[in-house]
Structures are given as C-alpha cells and as structure tokens.
Amino acid sequence: MSYIQHKAEESLEDYLETILILSKRLSAVRSIDVATELNFSKPSVSVAVKNMKNKGYITVSEDGHLHLTDEGRSIAENVYERHTLLTDWLVHLGVDPRVAANDACKMEHDITPQSYEAMKKCILSILGRDSM
Image (cartoon, helix red, strand yellow):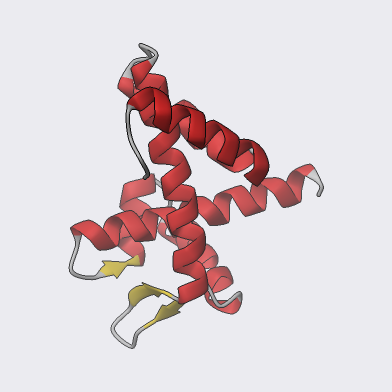
C-alpha cells in the first residue's frame, strides 16, 4: 500500500471512529458534528461522507443523520478498541493523558492485527483486565 493510500485509510478510520464516538454522546450525528469534533471544514467532511457512503460504511438519512452500517461499525469499533487500549497503556506507563491519546491515534492505524493481539493480551494482563 502506498503512503497516500495508507493516509486515506487512516483518515477513513478516524471518521468512522468519530461517528461511533459521537453516536454514544448524541441522539443523532450530522456532518457538522463530525466537522466540529475533528476541527475539519464542512466541505472536507462532506467529501469524506460521500466516500464512506459510496464504500457502504455509512448511510445518510433524509434529514442528514449519519448511521454506521454493520461493516462501518465493525471498522469503527476495532479502531476505537485499539485507541482505548493503547491510550490506557500509555497513561499507565506515565504518559500525560493528552499525549497518550494523540500517540494512540497514530499507533492504532499502523500496527498489524497479529502484533496488536499480542500487545493486547500483554497489556490487559498488566492492567489487570480480562478483556476490552
């Protein structure tokens, strides 16, 4: 995968994760909510929404509400789990929570599934948890 393709996938994952997070806080998620949360322009989010819709990751209701499809939700939950676990681990190691969250956001996209599962098992053991 080229660098540009990788960055596009990373961006897509961030959008899906943001829609998931917002859906836990808001009764309905709109493009403007995503733009505000990510501090992106409305036109940028509109392009991303169109792309996510075309890929089958979201649907957009007539009133403009964004809804994750099963496939979109699966991707979003996977990324969110990685983000949460990596953030918690870095905070446990003494990293400032804001720095930990920013670093986790970078790491969550680049680690292979095999390495993530190995790290997850170890981190959960260190943090004294059974699962995420």
